[in-house]
Length: 293
Image (cartoon, rainbow, N blue to C red):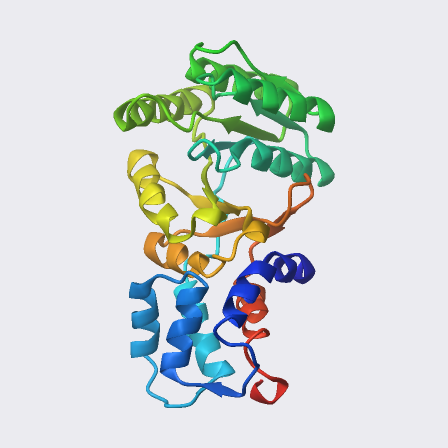
């Protein structure tokens, strides 16, 4: 796991090295400010972190404790539920929802679970086609309809099929953008209501997909989804393709939501459970020399 996370931070580490080319035992506040900003930690959070440090020479252990504190909400506890476990996947178009759904589905399948997909993004024909292709590739069943059909009906039919056939996991895609945010909010709320009608307590988990390449600009977007529908956890995609890995600190701190997984590549198996200790250490390894540990 650590190998995947460390590899996915390679571009962020390259960015850090432009302002901190040599490893050191300690850093000053000014140096750390440049480093954290270069990694795309928000300015507001950088100020909070540094204002809580009173030492002049900042060691690895000191910085490590402060960075971990910003990720205090990243742990997740699965709710009690009666099978099937229903997940609603939300996020803007282009964030990587469809690919992430395929990664989740493969993960569950490899755990020996029976999985079914619901192509609930009926706003875009391409979304239905892409998810259908993934279902065929992974040999996982899917419930879908034509573009323009009622997405909540797809959600209901998917859950109903899962219950009648003894499936363990249901993963439902949703539209990323309708004509207005109000339309999107209304559609997502309707899907949630219909999920609960189909299976009491569903969806058991609403997961927001965030494009890691957007960095801190994704925070406002994430807050909007959380206000619209209520988000239980986050998956950050494309971490391997961005120098903005430090934005994870800002996102987690601002939203106070658990980060469930990070996307560390384009293949279905490239979905890594987020571990805050390994993530922080992956960054600190690029900064501090062995003597500073």
